[in-house]
Length: 413
Image (cartoon, rainbow, N blue to C red):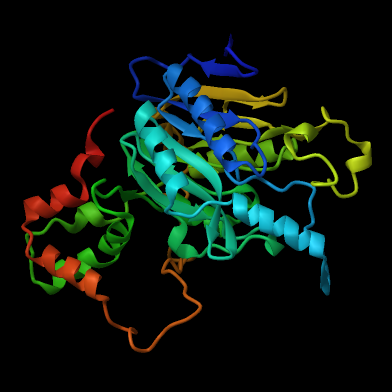
């Protein structure tokens, strides 16, 4: 593993030891801090980092948890049981303002970055949905298309007062030309059932020209539409899940040594590559007091005090550390992933295959979107635009629908 200096305060750590005859993907995890409360500046920084990763030949780039929008380390938002302070409410207002809508202009810009630098991009963001925030990961392909998102299903401890809970509808694994990619965020990686669902999951990416609403609708309805129409010639396999995750992304805010044990365990358990990206932050990367206060530790901090030490790492399916962990500063941490390693690992242990005992143990995942309010006037019916879209599908022949849904998703890099 060689250290390659870069033009800024970054170190690119690149493992070039893979067999050149094997199918490989060069992956990079970004270890860098948010420009807190300044989302446009954070996006500018993201583009600089993405450009540098691409210059090293990276095909997949993973950013930390909450990179866009920020991880509010040290804050308690003025909340105690039975009381929220005016200062804490104002702090939440500012945090809400720094979050992004999905879809929205910031998502469009991230998609444009992925397309410009021809990389698959996995980005941690704070998503704003009305007045509720979610800790979210966004996925983009190398054509500049937004593929989908994962919302953190279980925020940890005090995170629960500022972030909502994701449901089972946003736990995707995307089957892409660089591998089947998914993500779990920070401590939800310690949830065995969530990991098991991801090991079993994978879905072809629908054609990029479909907007996200139609893509999601297509996944839900196309199978039964064609079965109901009696079209036995339709190859519905292109819409079905493909087992299972190969590149497991784990954006995090946990810089403790013990985190490395969790990442190694997941690589071995899932027979997959694990890419964990964390921020490296100093006190000066957050606004100064009294605007922003690290509760309980502020008096012991200097501007250069490290408040998150990183520890970003890339681990192979055999449990070998390919790059990192890095605790020294902001860095691009890269490795060449030999995809043949997945089959070698699965020969030993396939957690949802030959090493499962489905007649004894099985998992049911509730993967439909949850909704807090349902109106009876639309219950059980397809909305007009969706009905029109489904009717057009029924009139489309097999070749056309295959191109519509898969399109260039299978093209090579």
